[in-house]
Image (cartoon, rainbow, N blue to C red; front, side, top):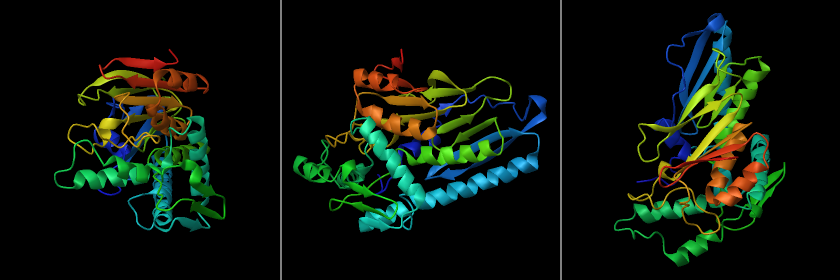
Length: 333
């Protein structure tokens, strides 16, 4: 069963090792005697890791510690799991005075991607999560999902345009609204950590905080190699992508299921309140993890024509979908 806040799709991707084939085996020391330094922990409830190569191990370890502290700091802003986080307080109170600047920035980014996708990306879907979790946690829950009238009532609270935002105050303009940043915050944190390493002059880094972000290339001179999971058989990969100074994020409905059949999952279409079923999984490669994260969530709800059109307008963006018959489609074609 699921909890009220619930594990995000990012938790699934980390736990299930959806990104495999990272090409790290036997790479304890890279060409030029750049030694591998790594960290494994958690970020926003998901397993996380950082791998970097640097000739000075002490310097590298100090940078990793700074990155760990940055992750902890931003979790205190964005986490749904921490009752004292800025997002949790906003969801409880409906208003947040003197909000953290990182929250203001990320909500502004979220609104931009909502507008870009025609509302397909919407951080205000959290009431739908609560509705489905309560419905399917009940004994003898109706397999078809929540009652349509109740669903319509909850859906009326879903509207990214009803979040008032400025540096002094964030407020919901409708009662009983709530937000989730699980479709963009991991990307934002990943980029923040990447910027820390880039400012320090590092260029051979792979960051996995629920999204992947590569700084530069693997020290061997090749791109990082990333395998996309078979959504039906998680032990194997269907496709391998090269990641070279870019980010990658994946959305998959099977990441968090409310019912055993997987007909109801966490990727809700904001317009209907129902779970999307166009793709088994959708991966987006983009210049930043924030963009990859938000687009992998929003594009999941779009048909292939609209998806192709939007991707074609974004510089450095590629999308890879796994369809119901395990066919792999890529855009631009």
